Image 1 (spheres, one colour):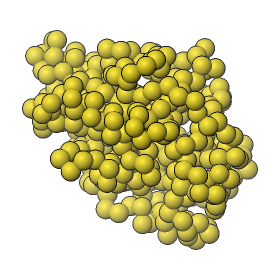
Image 2: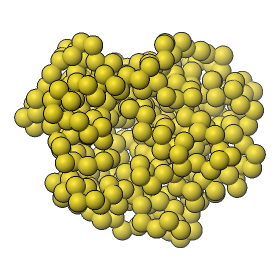
Image 3: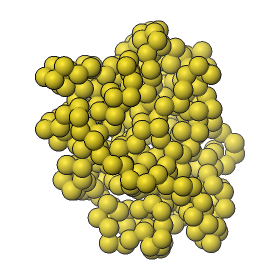
Length: 353
């Protein structure tokens, strides 16, 4: 832990990541309270909804994605790690908590094995917070830079949706720090390094804290201090962080730094087509339109969804979204031309997140 004061009692392996977050009291609200506060102008980055025990639909989605997509995720991790090692002479991974944290841990662990067995370079890994509307945590970023002077920082996330995080990264970094974004899945077509441009369900998108060291979503309290998080202590009996990282390590174990993948064609403004479909359903605020299977999953876990768009009703990567929509009484529409596997629409008035 790089902050002063008490450390977060997270369960991320310390050899895999240095965590630049501090413990702080959160403004805890229900989903309904959060929606009302956001509508009144309060930033979502100041609010936190405690996570419940993962539902059966979430647990099944995680297990199914790990079994069905696991081999591919292992390849994506290896391809992304190898690409970073080829591109830069002194790369340092800086993952964006939380969806990027597990990815960065797996990439760093893989690179250390390559370094020990094949003479490659290890990838140091730090994780910090970025919040839409607030930007990247500049205090944490300065600490990373001090630890690795002159290094090339590569910002790691799990997937892209409409590209908001890339916009926030580019808009909030110091002028001398390039916005190098590396992701496993880049259906938005905005990342500097993408293992694939296809939309797919990454296993950890379904579980959040219980596969990310029990860390909550990050939140903001004081510009002079690190961004904050809390440890979801109630979920400790359900924590699968160590097992997930071990599974990712095993899935990429046979691959080497020479491994490459063709990410496919880079999408060109895929979000425009989603906005047009959303407008036809009465949602015209772009902040309320969340494309990609990962972002759509987050809407059902953290927001108040209005409608679900799917490219293919029978696709296994969106089965959990169909289940969640059915349980919530949310309408589902199939659009075979949808550029993403899924897109969730938030009820109008839901505000920005």
